[in-house]
Image 1: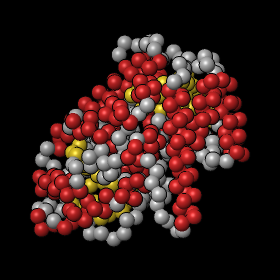
Image 2: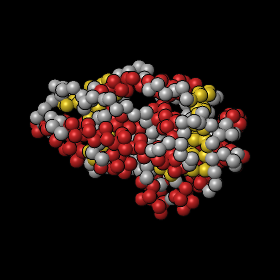
Image 3: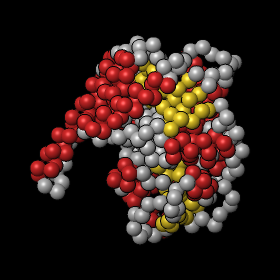
Image 4: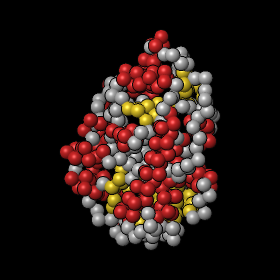
Length: 395
């Protein structure tokens, strides 16, 4: 039996990745029963994804109580009771995968590992891992009033220190594997404690990939899709790219449109909003199918040690992408899945070049992405065997 635990709440959060890891675990360990512990709504979303691919029957879905993310005694005690309840149900598991480690529960999970020394753990970390890098240390930001700003800065510093300390202690345990979704940590060896550095394992972000996508139908406009997440919206890089391309309109020889999904940036020329009230997975897929390219304008300081879910959404949809100079995109860009630039101006120029070419080389990007899907999935199957052992298949 294999136990997989997702403690994040929020329905659609990570549902494609979590379905992917369940699917890939089954491929590697087809004789093992898989228990998936999650909040009810999230489990239903994951099951829908697996049902689409006729592969939910090998997973037993188990609902868990809400896991809180507040640093207060009452919520942490409630989390502790639920964690213990979960681990009692999977105490005989071959191994346990924690799919999203949140800072507030890092100490709790570390203590659980001590209580269950015979369980082998794989702890998957998404964006929180970025906080251990020096350039992402908490900075004082003057906001509202001085007292509030000082308290907020102190709170964030304590939380960051707490997470980093617990992560390093977990990495020292013999029954723990720290799993990242990018191997760029190797470039930051001097910024990571030796014990953590030597413990890290790497997976590609998991997906239940399909291989029957079709390239977009010819359109009267070159269509660039944006799914602006919080960090992108704060940096306003999407707006900067739009403004730059619009400012060069006299050089652009073909109509174009920026399509923005479920986020309002205000009125700009050549911008069209695609809105969905419930933001279902099918809505996301429909949006991607309405685009030729996807713009992922994360600041270059984002995604150094983790990976972008939007990039993998684009890869699954077999749509190439434009990105700024974040390291975790290098591998896919080198495989011919997208185009990368070091500045807003350079990115804007590359977009203009593609618009004017009317996607003349699009078919090659399409082929590259199909090949990349197969490559990253095969790598994950091999890496799961390396991390947890006992291969039951011939990769």
